Length: 107
Image (cartoon, rainbow, N blue to C red; front, side, top):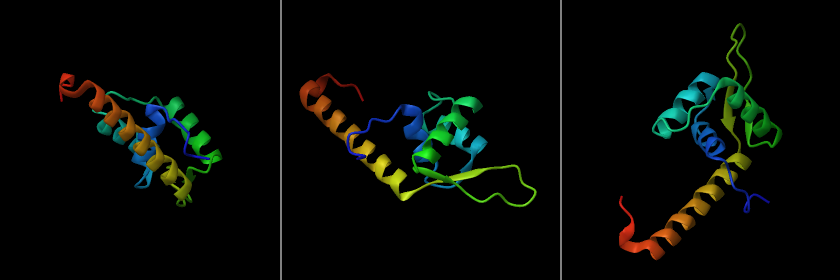
C-alpha cells in the first residue's frame, strides 16, 4: 500500500521533522533547517498538511497539556514506513542518475 507512494517535498520534510515530537512552529523551523532554507511552510499550508497526515494515520496529535495552546505531533509506525519507503525510492532515483550520468554530476 505505501510502496508506490510519492511524497511532496513538504510532506517528506514534515515527516522527517516529526521523528521527534514537535509543535507547529518547531516543525516549520526544522523543515526550513533540514531543507537549507529551500522549503518554507506557511501556517495554513502546514496545518492543512498535518490534518491530512493525521487522517492518513501517518502522524498523531499528542495530548494537549492543561493550559497550553501548543499542539504537538509525532510520526506513527505507518508514517515511518511511508517515510522509509520514500527514502528508498529517492535512493534508487539517485543511484540510477549517477549510473547513467557518471562523471557529469557535480557534488
